[in-house]
Figure 1 (spheres, rainbow, N blue to C red):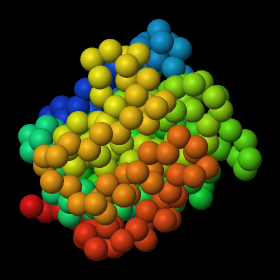
Figure 2: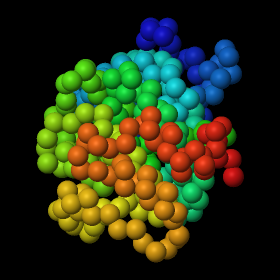
Figure 3: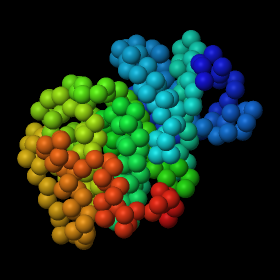
Length: 276
């Protein structure tokens, strides 16, 4: 969809459903079809202030090119004199982060379903040479059926064969060791993050969390993983985590192999939906 095909007049605007650094996200309905979407409004003045134009352009190009059940769709974009509008898939159940904070931790079946959904999305993204680099609960949304969607491709990058990236980006608790050491990295940083998320979903907090940032970095570099005695977590789930949280990036379990891991095969819902 080219930007000139759409304007704000094509939509009925509803309530605010999200807010970020550059603007707000509104519930909206496309007038002609009645289709409900999320309309992200970004102010050009703020983009200019933070010199984020190129960053946003890359985000739009990458997310618009992706079409997978576990990746939030970017249907179209358009702009006026002061604002840029992104027409996004509406995820009715909102951020996974809020659900995790409410429930404190998830069951193994729910975690296996979410991890399988993430692995499936990463198989797709990595085949298209896209790495996300900032997968965390705040960037994971749930649709009306409880299906997980990866959102916010602000730190995503396109990775050509045998070429690594240099930018240190993402969120501290989820950084892979090679990023902490400011070394070149590839798609395996996403695989590391799946290990972090699997742990966090099961226990309610990320594995290397510490009061001081330097302590978090130290624990990441040592791969200092501690499995608490409560809640009880099966050995199979711990085995998967231990195969993902590996300092040598070349030895981390790939998304394809995550999908065939016995714990995932036994526990994940094949539909990818968690309605309860």
